[in-house]
Image (cartoon, rainbow, N blue to C red; front, side):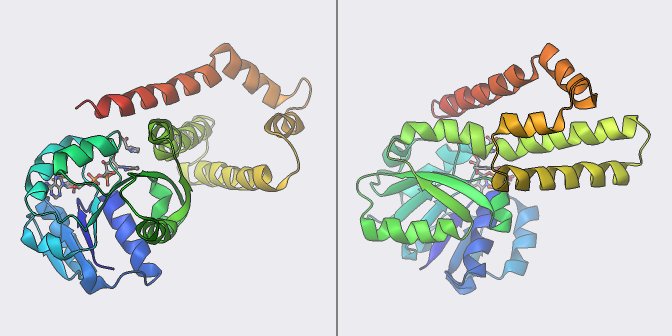
Length: 267
Ligand SMILES: NC(=O)C1=CN([C@@H]2O[C@H](COP(=O)(O)OP(=O)(O)OC[C@H]3O[C@@H](n4cnc5c(N)ncnc54)[C@H](OP(=O)(O)O)[C@@H]3O)[C@@H](O)[C@H]2O)C=CC1
Ligand SMILES: O=C(O)[C@@H]1CCC=N1
C-alpha cells in the first residue's frame, strides 16, 4: 500500500513508524508532506520515497491519505488537497473534532475514515477508535484496521458522534496520567527526595498498580480498600482528595475536553 501523510508531527510519524515496524508499508511507498522546515530536516533520516512541503498532484498516486495536521490547519490543507485527490483514494483523518461530513464536504470526496488514537501508539501500545463513511468498502476498511492495529488496539464505532468522547477519554488520556504522575513526583520532592528517586518510586508504583488492575480479581474499590488501612496513611490522603472533590474535578476536566472536541468541528 502507498501512503501519503499530511502533517508529519508526533502522531503522523507514530503511525508511519508503526506501519514500517510491521512491514505493512515500505519506506519508498511513503509520501510525507510537512510544513515545518525544522521537522523536514529530521524527516530526511526516515528516508521516505518523497518528502515535500507542498500538496501537489503526485499525491494522487497514493492509496491512502492520512490527515494528521492540527484541526486548525485543516482548512488550508483541504483547499490544496481538494484539487488533486482522486475518487478511489481513501482519507484517514486523526484530527480531533473534525467530522467525516466536514472532511467530505471540504474535499468533495466520499471515502473517509475518522480515527482517534493516542500517544502510546508510538510504542505500539495505543488505543484507537474509528468510524467510517458508508462509501468505504469492507476490503478498504479491513486494510486500514490492519494498519491501525500496528499502533496498538482498536475499536470500530458505528456512531461517529462518540469519537468526541473518545478524544476526551483516551485521546487526551495520556496527559491526565502524566499530570497525576508529575504531581506525585512533586510531592516526593517536597518530602525531601531527589527527583530521580521520587520518579522511580512513583513510576514503579504506577506500573505495578496498572498490572494489579488487569490481573487481580478485584474491583477498583476493592483494590483501593486493600491499600487503605483503617485509620492509616492512605485514608488520610483519600480524605483530603475527597474534601477537594478531586474525582469530580477529573470528571469535569474530561467533559470539558469532550465539549472542546465538539467545538473544534465548528471551526
Ligand atoms: N498529540 C496527540 O496526543 C494526539 C493528536 N491527535 C490529532 O493528531 C493531529 C496531529 O497532532 P500532533 O501530531 O500532536 O501535532 P504536531 O504539531 O506534532 O504535527 C502536525 C504537523 O503538521 C504540520 N503542518 C501544519 N500544516 C501543514 C500543512 N499545510 N502541510 C503539511 N504539514 C503541515 C505542522 O507544522 P507546524 O508545526 O509548522 O504547524 C506539524 O509539524 C491533530 O489534529 C490532533 O488533534 C489525535 C490523537 C492524539
Ligand atoms: O489535545 C488535543 O487536541 C489532541 C487530541 C487528543 C490529544 N491531543
